[in-house]
Amino acid sequence: MKEFKGRTAFITGGASGIGLGMARALGRAGMNVVIADIDQNAAKAAAERLASEQIKASAVFVDVTERASVRSAALDAVAAFGKIHVVCNNAGVAVGGPLGTIKERDWDWIIDANLKGVVYGTEVFAPLIRSHGEGGHFVNTASMAGMVSPPGMEPYCATKFAVVAMSEGWAAQMAPLDIGVSVLCPGFVRTRIHESGRARQDRYGGSGVVDPGVGATPSEAAQNVLSGIDPDIVGQRVFEGIRDNDLYIFTHPHFKEFTQTRFNAILAAFDKSAKSEALKQVKDWGPMVPRTTPD
Image 1 (cartoon, rainbow, N blue to C red):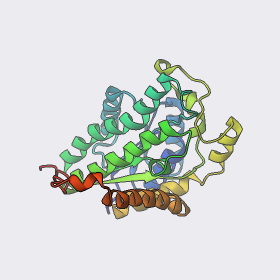
Image 2 (cartoon, one colour):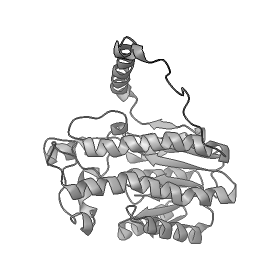
Image 3 (cartoon, rainbow, N blue to C red):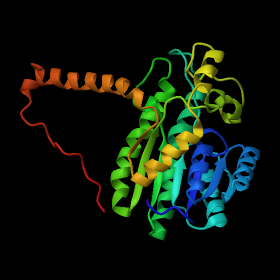
Image 4 (cartoon, rainbow, N blue to C red):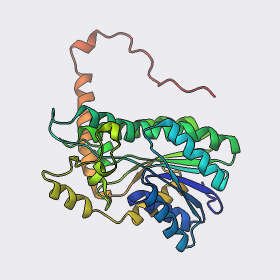
């Protein structure tokens, strides 16, 4: 996307943190912004704050764990501004802890919010963007935890790895439609992700304290998150990524070495497989090119 003025962005988890940073950056680029959040009061307050900064903003309720709620929010967004061009599937939660200690309902919660929420946001809005023919862009918030998997963060990493994988596939599918896809992989950002339990729905156990897996103690987890970078800087970085049609958007360049270490281990495993006695028996390796998606 090169044209932003007068177009509209829909941002889940938009009332605070990275979502609000995105809203501010895109709004300053001339876009209307729809603040979609499970906390209606916070969404309204965020929209009012943006309006005071001369950014056209509207607040809508959304629970990204429910497809019907995402559909309803989409209708509200269209009613407010008409065509939607940018969708930031940003809402997410954090759950972690030692193996065997994570509750079944917390597994359901993080998968429904972090993984299925991105699916719903993409599947609901892709036809709407395609229908107006003006192009658009999806930004799916993953994490550096979508590139590497620290011990104790397996639920979070599992969902974020999935967001990276889905974004890579969708990018190839939507490119011919003039719809870009980016996956945002930030490191620590000053958000309230360590307090995810404050908005946990009743069917997952209700509000309460949840181990986010980013510190040995609650205070350490809070310190790690709150020492992160400014969400407004992340919002500006996202704007750059949309403008340049980047598939991967990173915010912490110095984390490259951790990703490189993982990739080196993967490549070394391929090299070992090339010398495998067992694999010498293989005469036909099958297709070498992934299946392409038809028009």
